[in-house]
Amino acid sequence: MTRPGRRRRWGLRVLAVLAGVGLASATAYGLVSGGITSSPDGERLRVVGAQSGDVLDVTTMRNRRLVRLAGVEAPRRASDGGVQCLADEAHEALEQLAPTGSPVTLRHAPGTRGWILDGRGAPRQGEDGAEVSSVYDHQDRLIAVELARRGLVVPDADDQRDAEALAQGFDHARSEGAGFYDEDLACTVPGQVRARIAGLQQALGPRQRWADEGPAPAPARVDAALASATELWRHLSAVGPHRDAPEWRALSSNDTALLRMRLEAAIVGAQAVRFNASTLAEEG
Image (cartoon, rainbow, N blue to C red; front, top):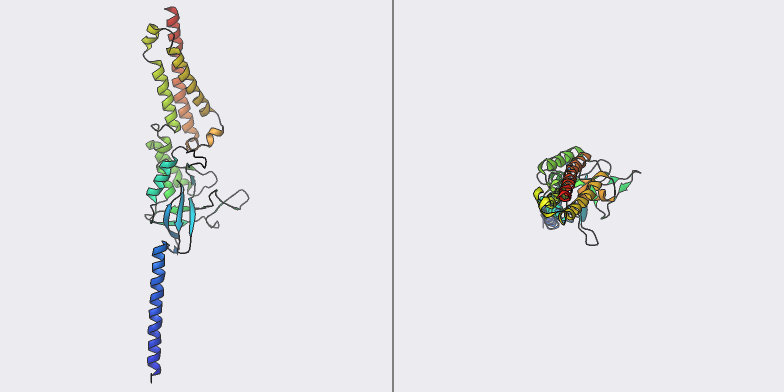
């Protein structure tokens, strides 16, 4: 006959074993699913992958969801197959900053549950259904700022979270000539300005050539280069649909003014050479 004390000890051992099995199962589930629990400093999750340059697919122990980086917008691929300037570069950068399997921490704006609000104070949902949150990597770096430092995102006018830190990131990219501020990249506005100036210089060529070759065909080439440069100058001077493109949204009013003055100086110089060369040809 089993004594009561022995029964109680046996029951406690069974409960301990069951508790251990439950803990092991929960741990295994968390490792398999990639989920990480929440903490007072934010909600911790694990990255499944980058959907675009500013959207992460993340997982908890219970579900997967999409999270958009707060305060910024990245260029993206359109459904019709079009690709915005630096869309692929932004996507690759986010994959590097938040690789598959890495932990991230979400810190939501107070009272928004991760959503940004529209003009009526209601949660605004992105086209992809992603919630919006400040996302930090395992080194506690704000991922949006890291993308801003590379010049691969633009400010989100509807979300001012982390604005000061992001502004510093954009200033860094601007000073380094990175991303949208890189004039060596053909799709950026600085790159377009540089290309137009180079086109003018190439069309003009050595000044003596005008006197030797006469008005044709060199004037036609200069006129074409002038027309192309003038069209871009008009875009720099006016507000229009083109300003919705990310390469234009990345520019501050000061950026645009400096680029406009630089291009204008090249245009005026080319027009002067064009006039003088034509005069020389007529006199010859």
